[in-house]
Image (cartoon, rainbow, N blue to C red; front, side):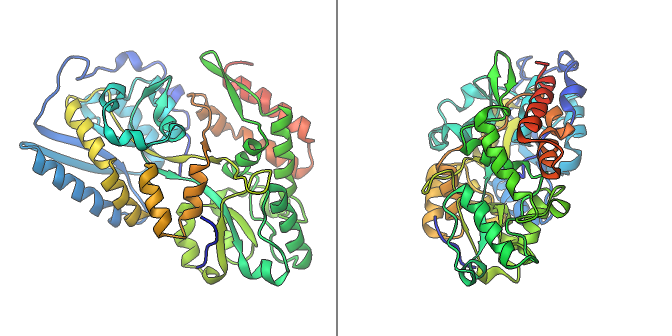
Length: 432
């Protein structure tokens, strides 16, 4: 596979509604002053399709931690991502059954904090040396209202995958701007109607967002203790209009692409039926293992001007400490170990998870051409969804996909679709 140029995050569905009234029931060992230094430290991590490499890294960290802490046993349980809402709900309501340390998706954070489920680690991390090598935009994915509720454990960002042979045979250059991405996709499909010019779906929100951000728009902006929609701004609409051009018969036909999410979008590329797609570093292994591996390449998704990079959504997972732990000191120390540079590097080698530390990523980019475009994308600056429990509602109601799909179907103009989405967003934020 030849690459040119240098989680999986999911929103929590309904947790805020389930737990918003339950915070007063939370009792905390930390709050009562209990901080045991022996016994069993319970850890929840997410299960994976191919879990063995992750387990080996975690087991090494556990062995190191137990060797350094007499009388301490670390008990790791792997929980399904799909059932995490129910599992965390139960943990927040009953600290006795809760873990001490947990992996959680960064878009779940605001709901967990509102439910008083996670411990504020700001003071614990203030003098932690490695923290200085986490950029502010990445650190913000574990932060609510200026307080740190964990450490980012890994990142996932998206870039532009393309077929070198297809572009070469058609005499096309690698796109240098977002508009050229669309134009190149159109040129490909004009020459070969069997191929999708750009495989990117109407339900692929994390492919759409960079178009909005690159044009100076945003989904919403902070407004007091909540947010106000800005998806209907002129800048956001410009990005939406351009992304909407992808979902057309001459690039990616709506009947095929309107309902597609990220996995399906990338699968078309892996299957050889698309000239380009917007895929993540977490899709690298699938591309490497495909029949098109020798003719696939990736560059950062360009911005609006040649040489610029469109801001990418900073997906990923964090490690945090449950508020009800009775082993706070041990919990924080384990988080620092497992989320530290050594084990983040090991997790990259085992699972392909991008480390959050700038110096570690720089070393990887210098030694691995295949990961370099994603590192360059992160270094150019990432963006995030509004940090509010209301994002669970936004995601569950499919507000943004519905907006894009109305554009693709021709049921609404950009102005109409964006205005409707803005009203729906404001309702979700409590601004309606």
